[in-house]
Length: 282
Image 1 (spheres, rainbow, N blue to C red):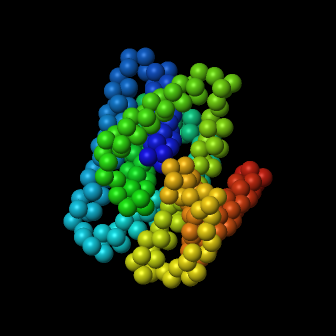
Image 2 (image 1 turned 135 degrees about the vertical axis):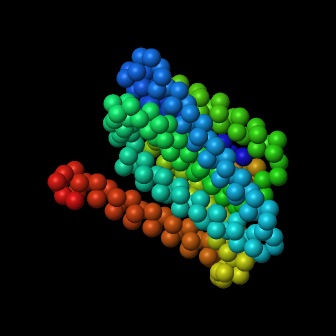
Image 3 (image 1 turned 30 degrees about the horizontal axis):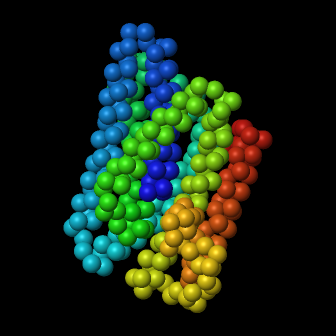
């Protein structure tokens, strides 16, 4: 449940940031409010895209059975982990440029009279956030074997909505309490921990499918210190990938995830530094 709350909270705040930017820009550029209708039309279209993807995933899961369903779920777990890393990298590059990007695109659409361009811009932005959320939720539910408690799921979504609304209000009200930079840095760190947790879950599922040999299993036992079967231990395990009885394959996969992520982000920082130092370089 905690994974669901965090991921949905983060994605809703990002979606609110996009809608808030577009809303503020369109109000300045069009006092009639006509363009705002296309903004809300685009937001609705983006939500429909996300709902359609959820329907496709649930439909495929219901059609598959036995080992095929296990393979499908394992793939989704791995895809969710990769998407989290990709999303963090994307926001590090484009997060500071979102205002300028949407100002340019919305201004061009207004100047040319192509109001459908505003709807498309909003639909793509919201659809991207919503689709990522759907895949993350499906991947996390697969990692936890099943998400059968729909009442608990509904409570988690409502908590996410309330928390996202409060967070957005804080971010808009005053940077003294919470800045966008602090929000993104904190959420990036937790998202990467969630991705590592999904990697471990994916490895466990691959071991169950016979795709990987577990090696020494268990490699150690830290249940006396923190049992991942307890309430608090389960929370730590869900958010970080901790295992009290890890197999060697789990430890190797977890370590490789952080090594490769560190290399990837270091490469991205160097690339961004080179671009700033040599702005004319392609």
